[in-house]
Image 1: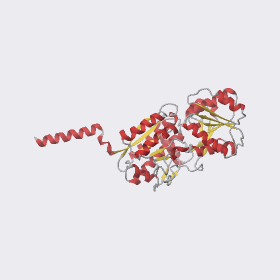
Image 2: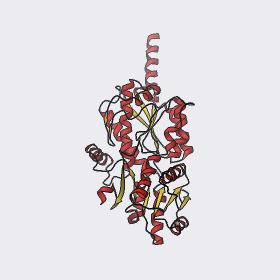
Image 3: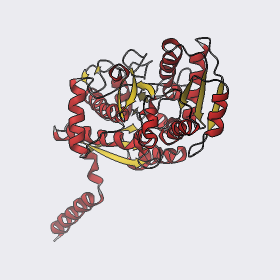
Image 4: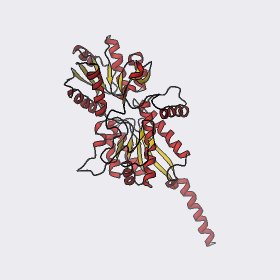
Amino acid sequence: MKLRTILEKGVFALALTLATGAGAADTIKVGLSGPFTGGSAAMGVPMRDSIRMAVDEINRSGGVLGRQIELVERDDEAKNERGVQIAQEMIHREGVVAGLGIINTGVILASARFYQEAKIPVITPGPTGTLVTRLFQPPEYQENYVFRVSLQDSIQADMIAAEAIDRRKYTKVAILADSTNYGQLGREDMTAALAKRGVTPVVVEKFNVKDVDMTPQLLRAKNAGAEAILTYAVGPELAQIANGMAKLGWKVPMIGSHTLSMPNFIETAGPNAEGAVFPQTFVPGATAKGDAFLANYRKTTKLDRITGLGWAAPGYDTVYLLAAAIRQAGSTDGVKIREALENLKESYDGVLMKYSKPFTKDRHDLFADSSKAMMATIRNGEVVRVSDAK
């Protein structure tokens, strides 16, 4: 009877373990957060869907270290305070070994320190604020757990200034930027890029997220003789700028950051979005790998029209970079994953590029300059390279 009681207790304990999910150690838990609702969802949802697709591919191929990747998803709603809450939940409740995603500069600036303190790497395909990968530097910090595959604003701003000043020869430009961390840090980078060329903007205007009337800012820019509007904002407000110019009967080029490729800008502005110019790291037709990704993305999401590719493509690549780092580390320990990312020995033929030692201990940004980026534009409602639009 005693043996039977012991066996029964053992069976019950095993059943309880499986029922409560305590056996989840068999999976590799990876956090995925981003804006899946609200104005920034046009960036977050394509990123999320492409990350899901990459995880599914890896899992169907046997996973990593013989284990399946388990995504733990959270919607940060592009809110800084929500991002902070999610970071702590991912670390302390979910026990993730790494983080992927995060789109908005303000959200990662608010939440990155929690991952840093927990020694959990984050590979982000979204926020472009120049400070993102420079938060944790010597002498205060000897290790940095934030890695980025998006094109930082210091590079984007220089590309925007080069387009407006060097190539188009404008001498009078206006800057319109929203009041978020993203907009104001981008404005600083843009002002610096113009100053390097001896140009001072004729006006610098600010507006808030959800503003629907840009008439005062646009009139000041028009009256100052602006030949182009340089922008740092996200889709809905960018559409208000384009539509506001149309209402005023004033048509000058919009040249701005990669958020001009957001579908909620293109769709809301309609014909007024045509000709907007911006930096981009991926467009359809660039590479065979990219075309294969697009075909699979279309099949997986069942979408006829693919939008938000500037966030979908790098999101997909972050999963494969993380998987390569875990394989090289032979472990899911955060310190070892970080060390592997800083010295990846495995090359990966990705959607954005062929990755060969993409990061180092001192450089956690994939892009060191603009040589692997391009200027893109809107043509017939689609994102294409500027060279293909002529």
